[in-house]
Image (cartoon, rainbow over all chains, first blue to last red; front, side, top):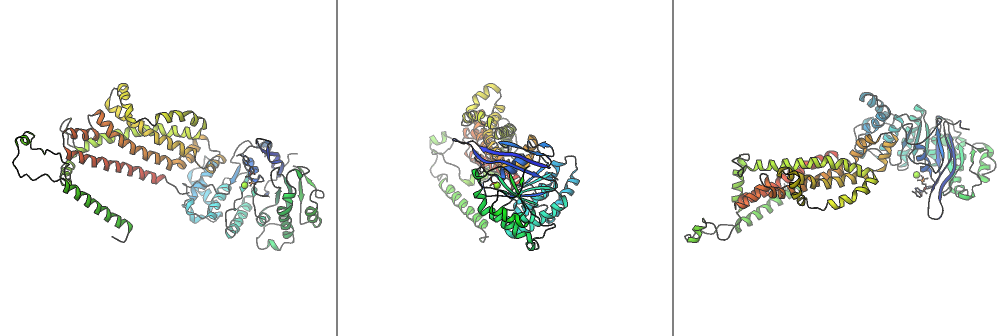
Length: 298
Length: 276
Ligand SMILES: Nc1ncnc2c1ncn2[C@@H]1O[C@H](COP(=O)(O)OP(=O)(O)O)[C@@H](O)[C@H]1O
Ligand SMILES: [Mg+2]
């Protein structure tokens, strides 16, 4: 059953309230393969950050477990790097020091020269070689997020978790950093789990996009395969025949089905595997979402 | 000079200083030595019947003599202003740093542990409003040494702002930064040292700055009580000697040293300040 590199099994999160428990999400099952890039999309408040924090070991679930590489996640670890939406750089450290902070924690035996070289290498990959000695306050939002990405990749975590990393950035900056993220991901082949609000961003980056229904009682309704070959380029990708099929499928979900399928309306906790690029799948998944596509079990 | 705000401020300060010194000088001229001294006046050693505050010109003249030889030592009741100030600064710094050694670690504990916070708050609330000088009799009885009692009083009055600010700064470190420490598997000590301390340092320094100010206020009063040496004793002693020149001069020196202490702490605070 547990053949995935990371598997999220029957995860649930509740908060006790006076009358009856508030169930944020329930029966969440996800499997990640090594080197896979998975995005998750869902309306605000459905519990995406909570899932990510449980994966990171920063939050505990009310039920279920996360198994990574055969062991259960029980707390934060250097094996799981996190990039938060608000960058969370340490403001009293320079760009280089922020990255070497992570590198030093990862490899405590390395000397300063080696730590700095390794850190500079990753800062170079995100185009920040010229700003090594600047403090975060002197950097733009986009540059700060690049530092944060460099810090996460530089520690070579087995699983990288990104919580709406580009949410606060303008569209142009976001595009540039998405490219950098792809570049660094290509070079390192890390397993990535990313939360996003941006449908186009998800298609550009992900192998698979998880769709979450609205909370409370949220669940992961579908796992949408992005069958567009890599390397992908933001200007070419829209020419690909599958692009608009996938996009329409995602938008349709966000606008209509995420609400319709939410809460008690969901018949099972199973996640549908969908490939909108296949001729009949799109129609099937959009009109009668529950029946046709094969059920996905973790 | 008038173009910049600073330039204008300096000019205005000068004008205000000149005006207030002028008024002070004008209102405190000795009376015309017209009539011959009465027998009573001669008995009083020629002193005015109505005591006068010495005018600034006299005070400045006196300051010049004092400052040109600040470290002379002519017996227990006659030491230079430099020596007296040095005694006071020594006591203040000793008590102050001892307080920092206790207050900052304890503040960390209170800031990091909600249990300790709840358990220790009642003690702090009762102890903090006690005037530091109220401890003096007890200190003298227990320590049996006036010098060390004065240092103890400084210790006790310095501790509270540092303790409270440290606890507050530590408890309010941004959660994101703690999470950065957690995801990098830093242990408790490393988290305290590499994340919490730098994050809380500006707040801690604010507490340290308040403390040094209070310590300097309290030392003058404490030395008036215990006597012997120090600027507080000096002021009181010169008052007993009715040497108002010296009294005014030492009041000014207390202000200047207090300002320098505050500036020193402000410089340190600038070093640990960060912009979010
Ligand atoms: N302490 C709490 N008590 C009650 N509800 C909470 C608490 N913390 C979070 N929630 C709820 O959990 C839900 C999921 O939050 P979150 O994971 O941040 O959502 P997302 O990242 O998808 O926007 C939200 O609806 C929020 O109201
Ligand atoms: Mg969120």
